[in-house]
Length: 151
Image 1 (spheres, helix red, strand yellow):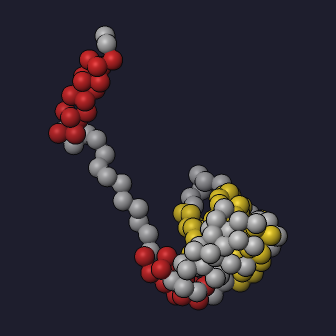
Image 2: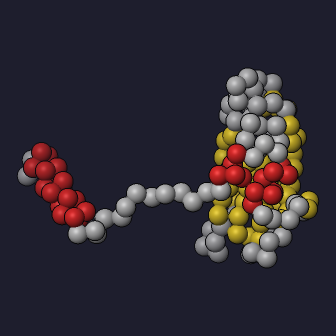
Image 3: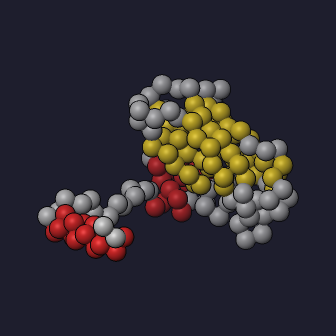
């Protein structure tokens, strides 16, 4: 069978499956728009409807002391807390304070690495929200020498 024939048959089969409703529809992310548009840590907490965060040694945040380029700042966050349902990354002086939100289940290890943009030197927070709505955090100040959010 030639490649073109294979592609044509694959398209036909996909069309039949879609017509029968056997293919999944478009995926839509469920997210809290107000939280992602918040301009401060207090606004994020209010938008999420959780209590004020309390500092905890059970939540960890690692990142560089100095980020030479604010456009690509590596971070890692993790927690050893049982029953965590969500991990957040908050960047205090960014245009949008909430930089990332990860929903956690028992099947997921609550440990993530990511790169974020930072507008300027500020505190970065790793926030863990437990199933019983306890809100715990770790923080780190990261100095930015070249801004990534419009700077």
